Length: 125
Image 1 (cartoon, rainbow, N blue to C red):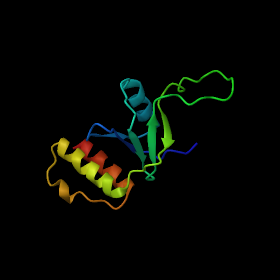
Image 2: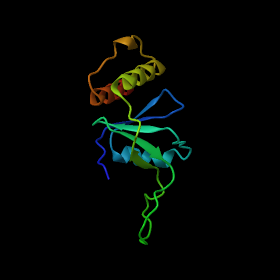
Image 3: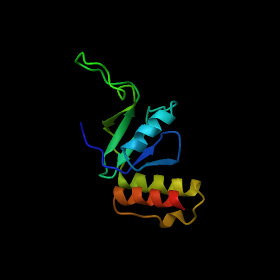
């Protein structure tokens, strides 16, 4: 299993809004409070720039141990279609417009981590 580097962003397929997650606790809260998660094309992008697909169906277990409390939560699987930096810049700009920020064309960053920090900054203002 791959380690997720927090903070991270959720990019839902049917929304321009980005969801900022500061920690794994935020991820668990998001899963518990969003029972309608579609997940079909939703992605989580971590601070290391790794993209994960959000998979709704629990992974099949090959042993007979009792299921854990998190077994029914959406799973994060490394994506075969990662989010590239240029696409992420576009997503952050769209998110900024939705939150009432202007001059979004000036929003530029050189890596995914800076982009995630930009989203956190936009959320705080």
